[in-house]
Amino acid sequence: MSLAGRRIIVTGASSGLGAATVRHLAGLGAGVLAVARRGDRLERLAHDLADAPGRVVPFRADVTLDVDARAMVAAAAEAFGGVDVLVNNAGSEVQGPIDALSDADFEGMFRANVVSVVVCTRAALGELRVSRGAVINLGSTVVSRPPRGRFGYVASKGAVEAMSRALALDLGRDGIRVNVIRPGIIPSELRGMTEEAERAKLATGVAFGRQALSAVGDARDVAEAVAWLCGAGGRWVTGAVIDVDGGFTLGAADVL
Image 1: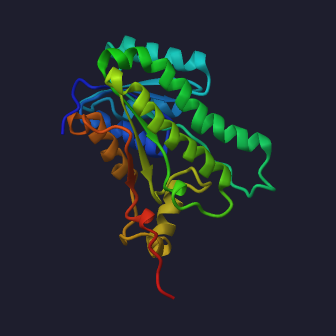
Image 2: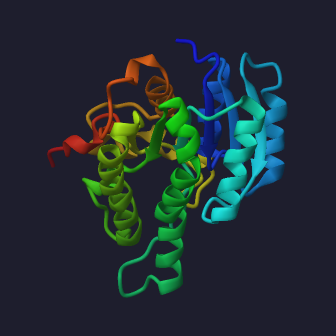
């Protein structure tokens, strides 16, 4: 697959799934605006990918703010001549049951996970209408299999999923596709552990009783799905929720 000439914005690009997605897209020849609040990490990422087939431009922004989102889109248009795909990957999680999670933490998750999608998609609409492009939102399999003590995160990702379906319908006449990718249990920094520590934990088989495949997922698996939706293969796909989860949403359970 080649994404040469594709112009893509990836938010939450400084680590985890976002950084892996930037690496993969740049490796396929795309021009990528890598967006996050941690500018130092973005600079290192762009430096590491200086010899990639594609071009990576770092851009520091708070994607929950309209002014930053509009500046982000303007930077992509200036660097690449337009925008073909917006990947809304930025997000956060604070765990806790309903009687323990603070209002500030609950609202903060909705700003990071839901409001950011609204703000960035709205800011990119002009460019996406010109390119008849695509929006890819990162969801989570917790929507279909909610774990205990994470109701706020589940609610926010459920909102992203419902909103994406509605936007797919609203924006379809403009030729804009909107889809959701739901990663399963993949090592990342999001749950409070380093990616390396979580990978070592999962490699012991701790998660295998909850999914169909006895294998640890990788950020590259998600990046591959993003790349497919960015390319010609996904041109007739919209309003879809794509699970990249090793069969986690099948509801597997070991027999005791």
